[in-house]
Image (tube, rainbow, N blue to C red):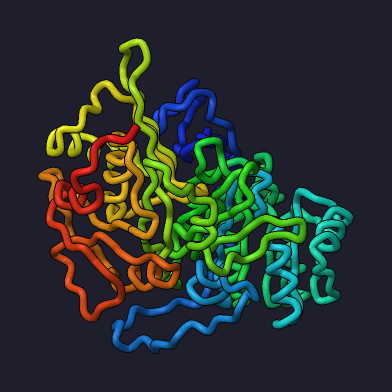
Length: 459
């Protein structure tokens, strides 16, 4: 007979405890431990992979190699983030803040796949069938090949998948799914963990791709245990806010492709539409003749993107501590660049408030944007505008040197395509052929001299 026991699990980090505690010993959060019943069964009663036929270890050289067969989602920006398309038998996780557009995009993907590949099953544990119909009607994606069901029981969903044999399955969302054999509530650590394992086994055994929608916490991470992200083949995050029409999908885990790719969309009344030329989009509202603004060519995976970095520097009010605020840039790296400007260039920033922003809501993570940040801050301090046809690129070291960057030719080609005439690049970068006019610099001082020359502070 199965033996029933209880223990306590942290809803924040998944740590387990034999007794309830006010504060989790794993993550330090308060009031996050909930009671869960664990049913242990004998070896003969186990169900799952343990009963599969035993497989013997074999040399890796004897394993047959084959390329994953993919099929397109019908949306090229989505395919880009997935690594080229949807892999049969894969299990994915898509997350983002409420209202950002997860269900909207997945409904669009479901309709396009249904039209090209055949039957698609959309399972909703949060919305009624009428709500799903209204969304599909608003997006103009009604199709008889797109089947929907409002269900939260994992076993029943599994039977539907086996009976219908769809080409793609969506589960919206994993936090609403529950196993009837567990006494804990839907969304608890145990239910989410068992649900992810259930759909993983289902996807692999039936060779049907399944996409799970996941809720996120206020901190931006997925709600539930970390095993949820470990179990799936890829994890996609939606970025953006309700005050901005642009949405960015970023892959943070992908067993079938790069994790550096991003997909860029714009929210319209007809749903999410692909942004064909994101560089032009990010620069469309760039101010002309304004200080503190500079363009930097960045790489997101294999795609070069031009983004505008803005800076505003002003005296600290009432002699208090200076403010340092960034949007879209790592704060620690920003602080390092300010220290270089103070120590190596003599900029008096110790009594100045410094604000930095990446226009368009984009987030920069590569160090190649360092020189652009330094130039934007210097431009605001001097109150001198950077030439609108000039871009800068380079990583900055603590000695004030400008270091080489990768994929320089791709970056310069993107600049030339959008009409830029000149770019400041690191001296240590090797460049074959002339794509556009470049100025090579070894240090930050040389770069600032090339851009501003002997111009005096503006009025």
